Length: 147
Image (spheres, rainbow, N blue to C red):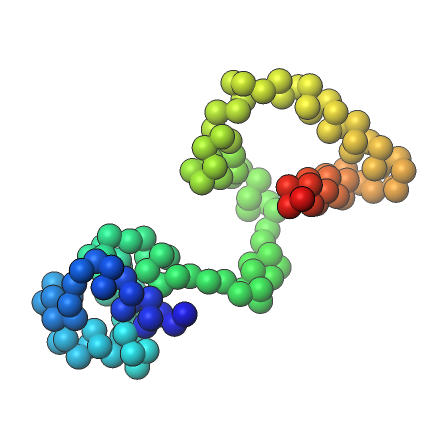
């Protein structure tokens, strides 16, 4: 789906006409039409105002859809030092609330001990270092989740 299609769909879902959107933004109605027909794109400030008008997050409005190349580029540019001090649990808990609460319910040490044994087994059996062993376990967990 194109950005124009997303803009059109969001406007209709909000129950607004192109004229009403144009009036709210102080622009000609034809500009709204051009956006929805993918002839032009709103600038970032107009897009933010549209998202607010439609009651959506900006990403939802434009349906930010990263393709595989974009994701690979982000991974290639990632810097471990830069992310060492990021509280990933806090960040991800906004999407997955269980991450903010499980520490009070789960015997973390018990599971950590079992995971450490698995990491050590991978290190001894396959000669992996600690990081590679952790990545292998992460991948195995992801495969289990998909089953």
